[in-house]
Length: 216
Image (tube, rainbow, N blue to C red):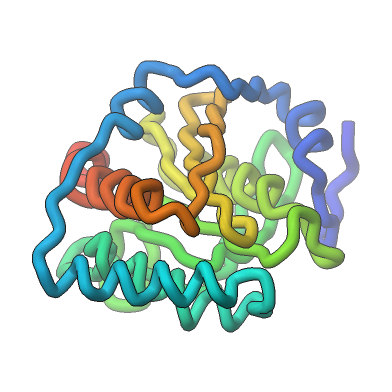
């Protein structure tokens, strides 16, 4: 059993081993339902999408992490409608923590949607992690996402599914977690315009279809 360590940086394999998790890349029914999303973009939205797509094709390999966030990811989040409401709050660079099975976990999510009031986070349901490279010197993006899921399960205590997205450069991976089982989608390449529109559709489906079910 791992000893409690408030500064520990976990690898994905360590989290799987210590917390007896099961990972699959074969779509579960929940993942299949999520990925089977469609959407229609308005003329204005299409213009924005074309612009950021062109910018990504030309520059994504040269962008640093903050460039990727400001020049591309922020626009995708906006097009997807992932915005705060009276009962659902959006948080950036939010540190969350909990003791899970006797082990203290603490991580920071780049973007999170949670039930809450103003700056008070109550029940997190969507986590977003973004890195420029596959394995960043300061952490493993998929590990941080899974760690955030474990923390959210401990906070929520309701057995409901969790949703997330891990972005590594141009590749977007969608992730669901149900109990100790998590499913990772195949990569969606945001420099392919059709795949970019599908990314937007998938994010919209979470906001319009899954999120209302989670907060009931």
